[in-house]
Length: 300
Image (cartoon, rainbow, N blue to C red; front, side, top):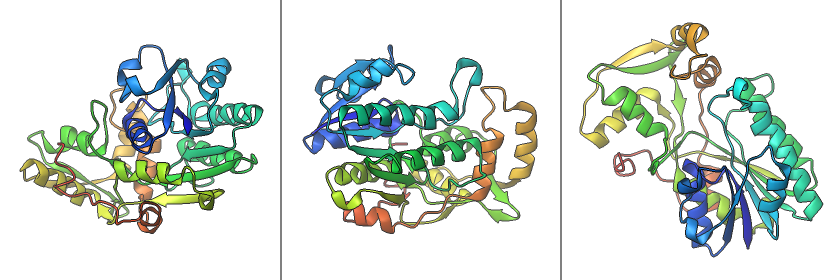
């Protein structure tokens, strides 16, 4: 099957490409000019130059495809550069769905996120709007809501690498985030398991119209994640409790600066936690999800 991949040059996108090729599919990627070097196995993919503001490029990447994977997610927006949650999470999905309908392509796999809800942050609200638009479009849509995704970043960035560089490696105590006196909790999920869930669902009509939450086998406190990253690197770290409210005060003053580590919205979502049961993922991939363990963090 020829599959258009929108968002195929980043961390998760590279693993989606690998999984598609391993399953015998032909990926066709929309690639911003200058990002061609970020494509995994580029010699086995069709690359279309352009971006999501260009409807002609969207048409070109969808040409002769039988399915589309939309895998775009911003960590933070830059409105002055025209990079917003509203456009990249929602508006661009609307444009891709319209192009699919015009070309008679019915199969869409949509990357969303765990924990999204009405009345949430701009990130959450726009992800939810994209889900609703896709599911109401008449296409054969499957939505995936992963918790935080980890795995070898292969030159990009992911959660464990970032935590190692910012909290474990420096000779200072690491931060243990707490909200209302409770540890922040997550269900880190292995990137290859996420990619397997996508590709395994591609030709399965039983997944049409469904939303799957993808979580790893354990709900882990932020401090426990730090400890396991330290174990993978042979480092012991002292943990210092940090109320998220204190960080949000700092973000109120400084999150407009690109180098500030977190925005107010990111901290709000962190305080809500991101715990997802592993049952959906286990059903989709036919085996237990891989844990956030020293073995699976060996890439560090």
